[in-house]
Length: 344
Image (tube, rainbow, N blue to C red; front, side):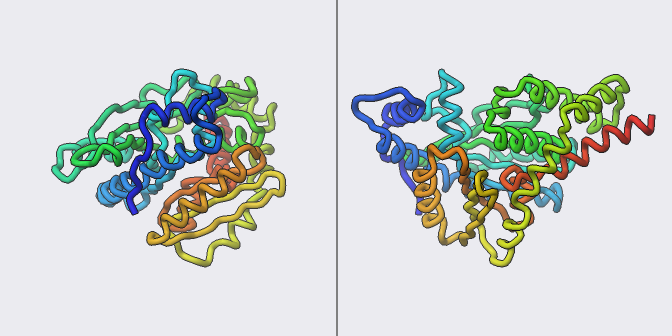
């Protein structure tokens, strides 16, 4: 069932302020959570519509292309509001997000071009708002991806309109971003937002520069050797391998049933992972259970909850390895750095 917005833009922004720690005389914490849940649920239908279009475009580019959709976690929304003081909840662009992971840069730009060409089709219900190319112009942190922002608003009632973010990454971009998230999550540090351990942040920035060279089949001896030495000093491989052990067995136990939507619960204290599956027809149930779990664990930093949609369990682990604390692909890329040094 399509969700519709029940609250004004002003109330949504006030709810965001309350959740970020700014009191309001008319909206309490529980009401703020309910407003957030309603605002977030409106993004479900547009995500499904955009996902169908993206799936069709992906088939023309590669059979190995991975696509997922997700609603941004409530703690992530709150944390973003706290860090970005000028951000308002109603204008947050990545509450509903789609992600496509491709093999290489050629596929990345081919998919980007295909999506942009589709904007002129009559059936396309979204208005293009913004493109940010963090591949050609990486963030200061080293993050790389292409972000496309759309507003689902063509022949759509006002109370069903919302923004959707599409992230396009290569496998190398995805491996880097995943490793940053895993370490940040495990250390309880917002490394993803460039806050936390300065040494780790600087190292990941250097690794991103090396990955750019690897992706373009280039080599810089000084940079490769310096980065390799810092990786060894900070024992980055050991840290990452230690994290990945936590959830492998429990995730494997969840591989029997089929499902479209996956509700993931990661418990750092008990070192367990649970995955609940839901068919397409049970999206409302999935959203309700997601909301209930988020309410229950909103202030519990030992537990992370997320609801995502992927085609099968194998793709779930490829697209969201951070929830499985799995950084194997990133570690393989670190090994390539040493191999390149030895070759040259």
